Amino acid sequence: MAEVLFYHLTESRLEDALPGLLERSLAKGWRVVVQFASEERRDALDHHLWVYKDESFLPHGSDADGSGALQPILLTVEAGQEGNDPHVRFLVEGAAPAALDRYVRAVYLFDGHDEDQIGRARERWAVEKAAGHDVTYWQQTDRGRWVKKA
Image (cartoon, rainbow, N blue to C red; front, side, top):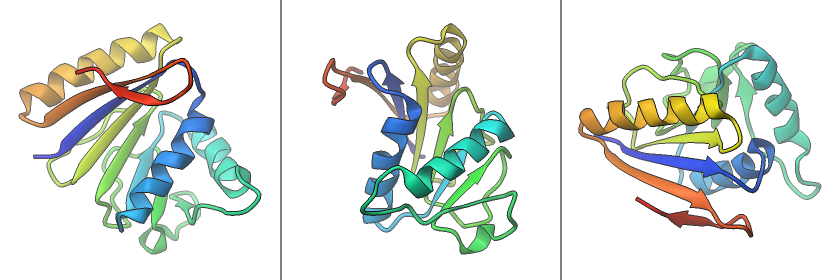
């Protein structure tokens, strides 16, 4: 069973929170796939991950460029995309995965100001809990730190 984390974004945007979480995953030696709900958001984050910090970048690619197997971080809109043999799957903005059993960890990031994303996160919580995964819920403090709530 996978460890499944739900990150409730209340103080920062996805563009602010995702890079740090990806850096931590790479530091653990994990390969990552990030699943988006739309190609538009995938492409916007693809660009953002190259320029989000002056002193570094996150090595990544998109399933649109055809080099998925080579990428430590693969950005996709496909639920079953696993071309880079990932350990971790990030699901953002309401993206729904295929089964999570093959992963060490799955991470749902959802916007706390978007009722649709909150509703989908609640639905996925019930699905992942019923599937027997180790599910935890994390919320941001007013300073943007993560606190485990459940």
